[in-house]
Length: 441
Image (cartoon, rainbow, N blue to C red; front, side):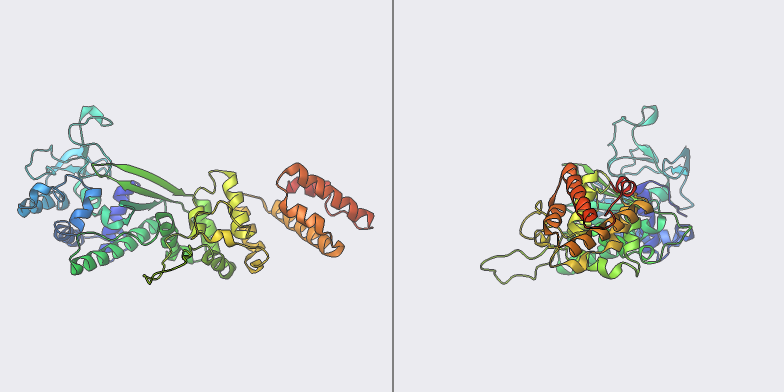
């Protein structure tokens, strides 16, 4: 009945419907499965708290139209038209739908039946243009032709998103398994939140407890695909998050991409080889409770951000980001750019946290994130071992302080040359020769 299309809004909706039916493959969905989803949406989208929440996804739709508050039967008419156009007895047009290529439904997607059959607009598809606006549409026609199954997927889309900062957070991947995982996780959380809100008589859906970046990584790491050992023939995957609002007061879209290199690195960190130390590093990156002189008795502090997770985004946008990430989390250098008194990075200390310094993790970071070849990584380690042996054997504290604090390449090179000369004059082989030096630097 359904299949993934490559379009994030439709695919998240398809994954949501599949998860709702307790299946993992959308091609195994039946019309009865779609009926079950349509029944749920009809019931929940026409009452609180989802009716208020949907203004961020489908403003001015039949679900959110204030004029229908006293005419609930019109909401049911609207639901019937946009949710059940997939049925075999619904007529179809000769025009193919833009998302699936299947014929567009010969059904007007409004209550009064005034819209052209099969054409969808902003109230049906987030972040598209409204009725009568012909920009970006072929032949000067407003709207997009949509098939019945695709329209149901679009209406299910918000259920497969998290609510963060008053917007929807949708996650799409070139790996269908990951797209399904995010949609299924958010669907489960949303259904629980709906039930809790209704029992409490609330008209609002609760916000996610984490910031959107932290929520993304935390949810990603819960995926079964991330926890299993990578297979040699398994294609690496990336994810893209869409933080969007279709609200009439301020439509907006922010896109966050987590490239396959970062996803692969995170998957490697969940293997037995790295997991223990990696989790300790991650745990030290959570927000800490703010320090107050007279702290009132309030709810226990719950962190919203993990700064390591936050800093994973943008690692490859700028080499400086990767360098700062490495120094902060792997070398435990205190972050002078830390934000506020809840940021734990100001308290990082190499002297007190040597157990969190791991060459294995650093080498994997260099290989996967910075694309450094194996020979160069090995030469860096050899140089580090040689310099450590030199400082320990010669008790050259001055060189150690210089090496650890120097920022300019020229000053570092001078310090290395002086140490090399001192070591050779003492009757030892050079700490570093020309070829390894060129390889490292």
